[in-house]
Image (cartoon, rainbow, N blue to C red; front, side, top):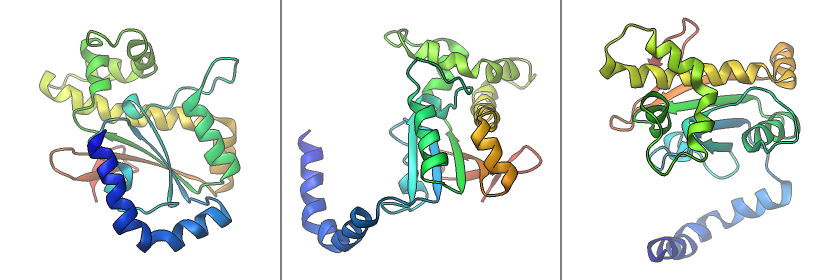
Amino acid sequence: MDDLISGYRRFREVAWPERKQLFERLAARGQKPETLVIACSDSRVDPQMIFDAGPGQMFVVRNVANLVPPYLPDANYHGTSAAIEFAVRVLKVQNVIVMGHAQCGGVHALLEGAPPGAEDFVAGWMKIAEPARLMAEDSGIPRDQRQRFCEQCCVKLSLANLAGFPWVAERISDGDLKLHGAYFGVATGQLEMLDDDGTFKAV
């Protein structure tokens, strides 16, 4: 905690005076981000840093393996779906980016089994991505390449699940909401975007 408190103090001394007026405007008018980013909780993958975005520009949801569950409104707890609903229906974002990344621990758990200590929730959560695991297993690609392939399949699966939310599909049909897939290389810093041909291409 000492490092975090020291960082906060640097923020107050250096960044806050420079950004005080920006935050005052954001506080006065409320948030109006144009983009929802669904990213992984991995500490190495920070959407705001990757996109060089400032406060108020992006509404960010982070969870294990950047997964979007199927549309299933019931009495259970749905943190990711609730955030998507708020961003799409209330904030009226114009873009949704699902961003996967290399060396994803959630995808590794999907392919190899959850590590000790992650059985209560991680294993069950990753069942959302079972179709991606099957695609990886049936792909015929070398085993050492399956993780990357599965990580990218998870992005595609999440986009497909997003399109199954009726109010997401409606806004896409109306032409005022677009879905995008992205993939970030932790070691390379390279961002790839999902093309219309189904492949990820460097930008």
